[in-house]
Image (cartoon, rainbow, N blue to C red; front, top):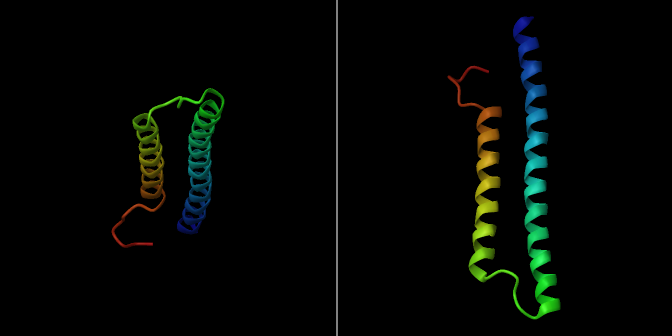
Length: 86
């Protein structure tokens, strides 16, 4: 009975952390989109780019790596590589 309760609790925790990881990724991507939108609007009004191509590439790479690393960490925490027992 205790093992069943433990599995239910683990399943609930997986749902909670998966939802949190999704929110983090959504916010990071929304921030990245806002960054690009702001740069585009600035470029449209002033005629000069707000950020150089290198800055845009650096931010895009940083957001991508951060989101992937966050998901990898959460996935490893939610689904740990165990000794085969389930």
